[in-house]
Image (cartoon, rainbow, N blue to C red):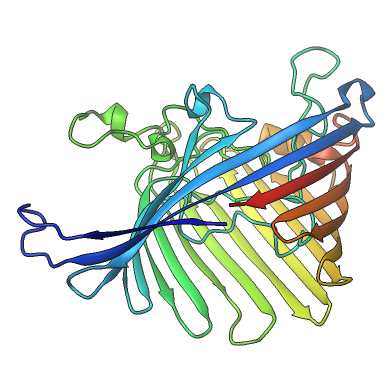
Length: 391
């Protein structure tokens, strides 16, 4: 249930708002809570097997209304507190998400903010009943320099956000049409830099990447360090829509990031995503293709490609089952690409039960050659049960 707070404002006397007329705005406070239990078993090294509980929680504050020049606006921010958050996102564990101001005229929306515009960081069109991304995290044990686990890669190489810079502050335009939404997003400082998702899934965010963390405050801080990290500029062009076909859902994205200022002369980082799902009756089928290229230096690079297909069947309005099959590979001449040449193969089966305000999803995943190396990382199995609610 959403709590709605109504307010009416008539602002006068400010130079900025001089001459404004009374406006009506609506503020909405909402949130969500997910609790889960996960178990992992790595066949290469059973000592890495583990299980335990996880949590994701979020509070959303949003406001929308009309302006005195005929435009409409929306603004908001979210506070996320996940079980995995730590000092990298603030000592309290809180992380700021979905911070934005939208100005809209007809079907055109101008956005300033972070983590708000449409982006490719989803696998919901393929893993329709399961939990989250296709590739697993931490399913081959922790990366370590010890002799037993040297060179291990704990993470699947199936691409996720595919180098999208949606978690950097930027500006963008979204145009709604009869066939879908077209968007372009520009960020002056890319969030992900030299460790940018090169292994497929893992993001590495440091405090110097101010494009993601917000950088300077307003009016009190003026320095290069507070406004620019090691990331350079980036842009993303995207489309989501149905092309006028009932039951069809398509997403297509291309993004490009300039080399970091510590890697001048290197290739641009690029990501490409093409995905779709189609519903007919009780069945939904989906497919996904992702390719990203990351230049570790001016002469070395990694190419990461993922492909997957998925199917879901609605047994009844409450119960659904799903399955996914995926492949991922690394190419290029980087150390990581040359060391992990096997094809990673993933199978997922899942079930979802909708009880109205509460939803339960359960997923079992089998991954062969985790991280692209059967010899070093081995195979892994993991399962998760998640219970979710919104308010």
